[in-house]
Length: 115
Length: 108
Image (cartoon, rainbow over all chains, first blue to last red; front, side, top):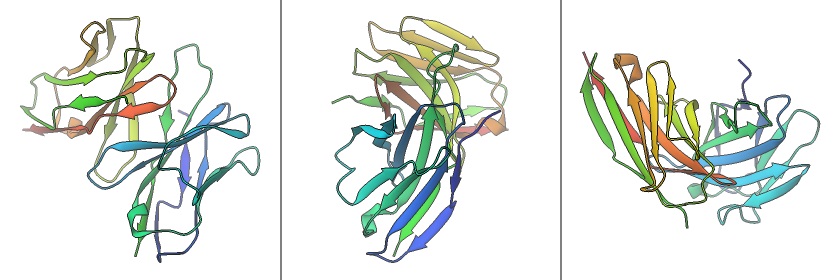
């Protein structure tokens, strides 16, 4: 079964450092997303990306966040200057046209710890 | 804004049926989903239902949707210890809105 892959699985970074989380969406998918889950809390939407641009973003996705699709396969989330409260599991997801419906697949997540 | 509510905890015995309930507020939801999350792992898509359906069955899983009451349920037949996990309900119009998750504990 096709899957969304994310790297790294776990990263520890110092406050103020830049972090890049990487994702390889399912190859024929067109829509890409980042979500995050702070420990013990809900999974929250950050941003959606289609046709090489952001299509929607939440209030969480402020100026310190950016997304990029640098080539045909990778989709990255950059956090410019990390804060303690950015510690969370970050999930990448993708979806594409499917005769079986709008199935949104998530990766295994990247666990970010800011110290 | 949109909201999704779930009960936080459910405990069942192995072999019993489990029913996890969810309510949502967004009447324009097009798809409703159930995801499973095992400890330290990602979100595994279990099943989904289109908003114009009222039931979907997939092996041991049955999803019931009452669109009038905005109520969604997931029934797991013959629950196994391997089904112990957190189950998230999510609704979608353009992006997913998740509930807080229901922790299912299956005891032998």
